[in-house]
Length: 330
Length: 214
Image (tube, rainbow over all chains, first blue to last red):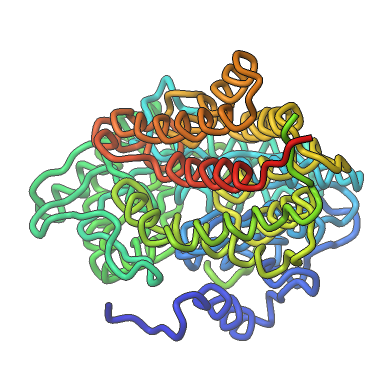
């Protein structure tokens, strides 16, 4: 492994320490729990708080989306491992400004269980908490089992819109409804070219042979729908657009937001190579790209690969996406 | 009726932590075939930390509560809440009992199983720890009902847990991260069922060794 490490067991604590040191203008560590990152605007009285959490290794997600008019609190887990129930609970407490807390997180077994227990703890303290569970990863389950799909980069759009709704004075139900609409309107797909390695394990936990690609790969290397020879970038871009839009089934003329993210070890320039063809393919299907994002927004350690997320927009989602906000990741 | 004293039976958890730490590499290796490869690391971290905090005179109730607290507040992932709930509900059921006989142990096992079923979304056959736990609880109860023999029931529990673990080899994962593998998840043991079999085996051996006759 060619990695910047001290003791691999300390890598998450050191990541968080460096992150809050670098971005102290926007975030801080919770005094109660060193695994909770709080926005400097967290706990604003009378405003709905918005929290999330997940395993580490996806930086800048999840911590990088805490900020002004963005997430109030983020529960931090070990690499690719859900935060504890206590940490989710402390994040909920940190996000609470008396108007309730929306927990917007991804559909993974560990997160579901830990959030479920955190909700029980919060209920004892009379904090109103509601959840939205992201399930935008098209290849993780067929359309008729959408509740089994995992949450991936569409979570960023879910957070952005939910947080904007809270910033604009929405009540808890309105924030939840906006975030739910955002994720319902999102579809994502990933393509992996090389696996990632947990530092404490020391070797990749799955394999992608040289010259091959895994189409539909998940955010932790979960297998996709096809393993096939690595095609040229234009063909991969068109394939990803086809997978997302075939599942989406949007009427011609729809406006969309597009997010292309690297998975950690793909050079940023290649994301633009992909985007160039993706945008043409999306427009060729009669859709209008209202706002694109291209960069490393939601990664998977050192995986080589990229994800594409397309969110269908309406007037409300456009307003919420455009609402002024600041956070380290975007 | 044979029983063990609850007082100082916290040593059962010390012994269990030793077994988990001994099997750290094996559990991670199994997990690595269809998961992250960190099951052994997380289990050893959680059980090891708990053992450091359990005093030599702790009751089994206190020791399981400490173990549960560590798993739920410091380990996270999927195993934190699943085993955390299992040991919390076991500890609650045991409560202030001074002696643990077969009836008390059976109630403790069933409460642990209920805890896992309540927090998780899996059912038997999904290639999870339930495939070791469910048959173990069933066989403990059935054997004790048939024979009235605590030691025989513990042996039946241990054998059923190990057979259950082995049965996951041919299963396709239905929940959790490995569920995405479909057919590719067949042919390897489930890491959760493997650690669960270690836990139940350690309990069976440790209690059998301590059994007294009233």
